[in-house]
Length: 119
Image 1 (tube, rainbow, N blue to C red):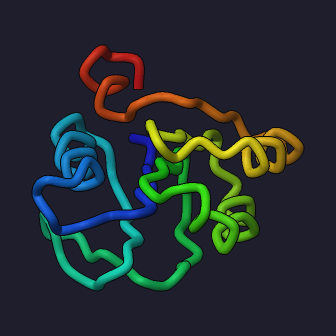
Image 2 (spheres, rainbow, N blue to C red):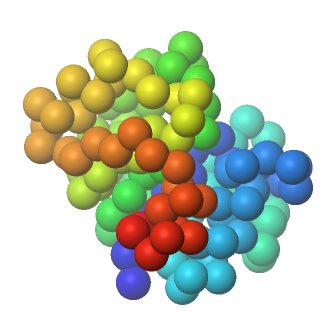
Image 3 (cartoon, rainbow, N blue to C red):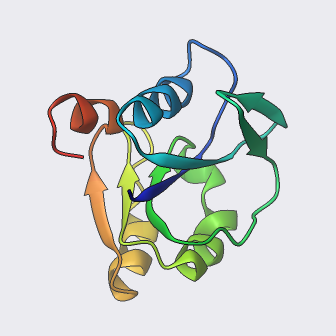
């Protein structure tokens, strides 16, 4: 099944990125995690460095647009099929870069997409 990279991953159980990790795994998706602090959730490591993960289908964003520029080149280099901009992470500048690189963008909520079978 397709692999999803969560950017803004957290071990805080009240964060949407934590819930997304939990629900993606429950739906059978493999995940990779990048966050501010190293930790382990659901047996998966939250990395703090931009690793060259293999076979990333979807990147789901949980960081605000002001923190995204440092990830532009990195995400494009992973060549995902799509990037999901969760509520509060929308970024017209980055969306244009992704479109220019033939990467599909979605302004949507990962949790809603999963819950409605549209992921």
